[in-house]
Image: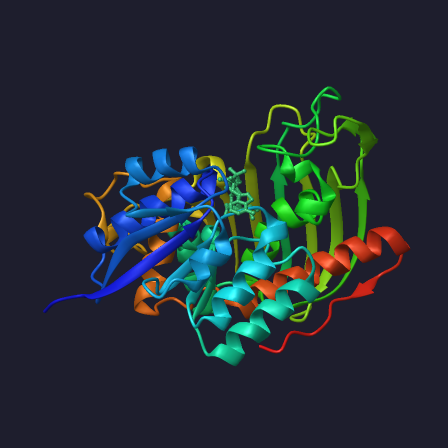
Length: 379
Ligand SMILES: NC(=O)c1ccc[n+]([C@@H]2O[C@H](COP(=O)([O-])OP(=O)(O)OC[C@H]3O[C@@H](n4cnc5c(N)ncnc54)[C@H](O)[C@@H]3O)[C@@H](O)[C@H]2O)c1
């Protein structure tokens, strides 16, 4: 049976542009799908660099203005892998020209932005997805299956951390290529939207809605030179963010993200404690979960270290032989394959709105010093 062509237009050739392009090329080779992804065009402002990227990955053409990309009739899907300040306008233009839309996280710089994107996509009746790729780690997916089977009983605690250390130097400038994450106008927020957003999305997916939060944030370096203006300017992002919260299921939330944890590069960890079981996962050892089952025989009870690489583990039958591991790039391949096949409830724009509502509440609480209610989502 011949496959349906899916002509992709990618915006941005940076870190995520590469991760997504790899997923577009690999998904159909390892997963059965009715679609044939075609790398139709890549868009970035610098034509020469975009052409080099297109040659390396096999994109057929190049655009330097994303509006021209969204208007093209020979494109079915727009993938937004550019900085956060571009997401809303590109997504709305893509919806208005009836394209499917994939977008990087955070969906918007604020929930108001992501809400406008979700509304536009719903008006146009186009499929959407947000690249919350950590849901697609086989070990995290196994955790989801164990939770859905009720093996944990009542959940008491959910805690998550995302720790990095790359902005500690006061000499590091803000803004421009590679450093847009430090420019609040472009990023929307600091670690809250960048790192905590991942922790929040996984938590909402695994443990349900968060009702309210109380937070603190800190900006350790108050001024940095701005790469685009050449001037020393105030830093508007949060360098560190921590919050306590209550989930709708009654469990307590403890979350922390920072770029000031010396020695940690991308330490995303989560732990869940329930009435019958506990589990923990760590991005630095991403193919394992630690699992404690209280119904094990008392004398043998202990933390199991499960290597999630067997054929009956999520996604693993599509890869190598049992015992051989998959890595970071596979999470994007899994997510794209799930989107094409409509499997495993791929995160859509409404899920992006839900995460952004929590990050908005976290930032509002850090400002007000009070508990803040998370706005209810439509979904
Ligand atoms: N899912 C994840 O784990 C993950 C990881 C990293 C980044 N992200 C998200 O992905 C997005 C991109 O981040 P990145 O790390 O790939 O950034 P990056 O700086 O590596 O790349 C950004 C790209 O966007 C291009 N760009 C910027 N403005 C543009 C415009 N107006 N029109 C067209 N192209 C434009 C740049 O030229 C560059 O190619 C961000 O929203 C970020 O939060 C997600």
